[in-house]
Image 1: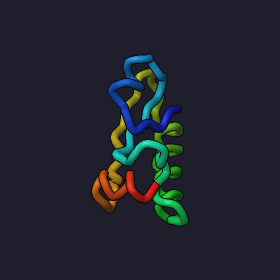
Image 2: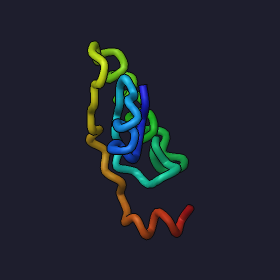
Image 3: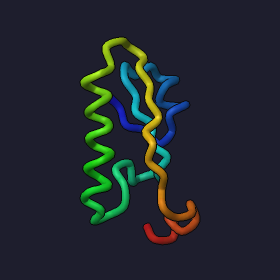
Length: 76
C-alpha cells in the first residue's frame, strides 16, 4: 500500500495498491497539528488496503489542500 502525492510516477514503478492525495510534497497526511484531517487520510488509505483485492488498485482520495501551493511552500 502506497500513499502518493505523485501518482503517475508511483504507478509507473508498479506498486500493488495506490492511494493518491493532492497534497504538497512532504505532507502526505495533511497539515501539521490537524489531527482529524490526518486521521481521515489515514483511514481512507487503510480502507483501500482492506478493500483492494486485486493488484494495481488505484484510488484518488477526495481530500483537497486548503491553501494555494505557493502558500504551502512558504509555510514549510
